[in-house]
Length: 228
Image 1: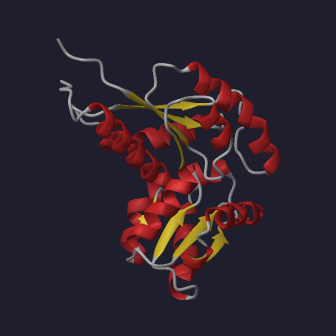
Image 2: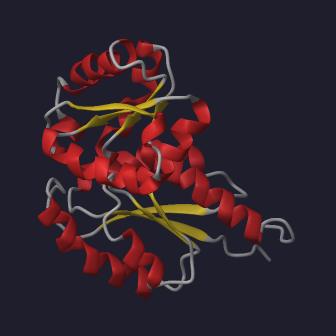
Image 3: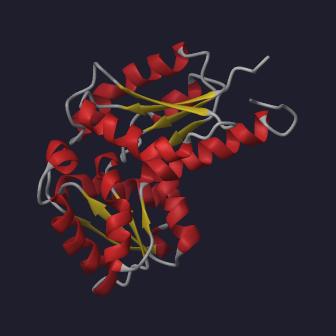
């Protein structure tokens, strides 16, 4: 009899379904027949886009509640680049919880010496820098530059890719970054094309976090069990 597959829950803390659908589409390649099931959901109580510290504070408790209630989940991914509620969610469950900014930085440093970040807006950069200082990685940080788009524009804007290319090239040529992180979950669909355009590794933070979550789940459940 087939054994029920463990699930990884990827939570979009905003209520923009286009962002969640975009993440699910990008993550389709992570679903393989013998692997964990990846489930993407939106936080329905969340704002349409998380674009301020107030938005981050607003979603912390709903995220914690969701994580604490989902006893059926083997690993969680908080799919917003500011990693809102990461620590309170970790306190609310005995299952691993991954933040996409933390995972993206680790992935970027594994693929290059100096990483740059493409932020949605100038306002985002200050809080991202505080987080990088807390992680102790400023010695490997090149620069963060903003494309000045809303979450909605990032997910569906016609000129989004051109703006990403411009900023990524500045990070590569002017700031000497040899890896670039996409600083928003809504940028995921552009990763492959952008990497081909600029010729250096481009890190999608959602993919980075899900990769780490999969490693954790596979290491725990698949070494001694046969999932079919």
